[in-house]
Length: 209
Image (cartoon, rainbow, N blue to C red; front, side, top):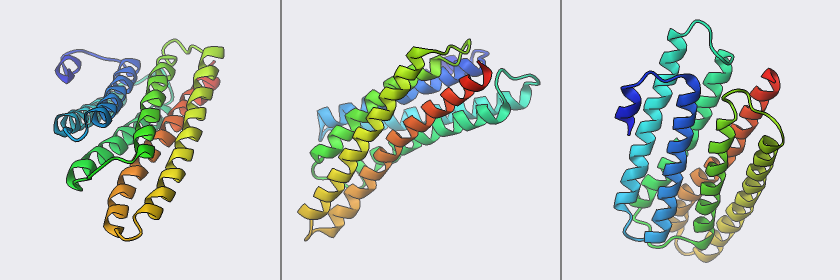
């Protein structure tokens, strides 16, 4: 997939869209981890590939910044957006790696629900990022942003409920608490970062509209 990108001259909006689509694919693989547990090695490997692809797209974006005299957005806007998107993919990969490295015995229901929330949020993020091309603005973008905000609130509720349950049910197994907490937290961070991305895009469009 990445070879097709590297072999073509892409612009900033193409790179943003490709990054967003790759993040959504990564989240879809996380959902597959939930559905196919415990046979997850292949899915985790796909998430790691998606993270590497996102890193390459981010590097290409920064390189394009250095080579472009007149950019379609302010340089700091481009860097802020692509960096936040890359942080989101990093959070997903961190959680996926921990599932393998920590040899997790079972996935808590709250964590499964958070992963599904993240996937839905990233589907909306992909649509939000597409609004950048041509500076599309209006009710659809506001609707998408509101839904991402709602999903972020839903994710927060699941996170706090899950952490509470984790401590309550693992009082005699602190190691399991540590392991699962280190998976809950990057998933929660990724959901928060989805809202950050939507806010950045909306801010850019308000500035240029």
